[in-house]
Image 1 (cartoon, rainbow, N blue to C red):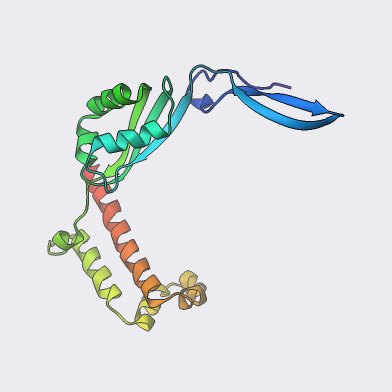
Image 2 (image 1 turned 90 degrees about the horizontal axis):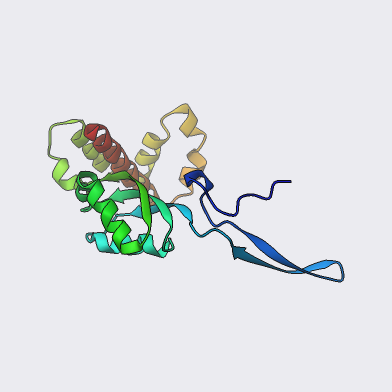
Length: 192
């Protein structure tokens, strides 16, 4: 039986490596205590920038999830003011994370997007504004109209009972979330 490595050697071997000290009393395991054997910890860390305007706060979030001397790959997610900084100065962000966490950063991945102001976008004459305006119209309909639109396909008709059990606020929340999600995806396509 192969017990595993005592030290991660690359990003695929992330997480703590170690062994257990096992105490056996009268033939039964009575205690198991893990001890770490690897000096270096490989980690994948995700940091959400949503609602953040200070990169220092995001780095504190990263620090809480890592240990000094870790080798990390950081994935930034979410939306907000920090999107442009992370996308335009990846090397600077990498250096900042390294200097403030004591970790080595192997890679910075960005799954972020700028804050989307639906109110400002709805007046444009494009597909995104059409999606926003349809979402607003749908959200303003009465309960039965919303259900008719949501359940207009054969597949969705089978789910009508589940939607019927939802409150009016929950239905409107689904409409708002779907509208925002579609606009978010359109923004990603437009950036590529």
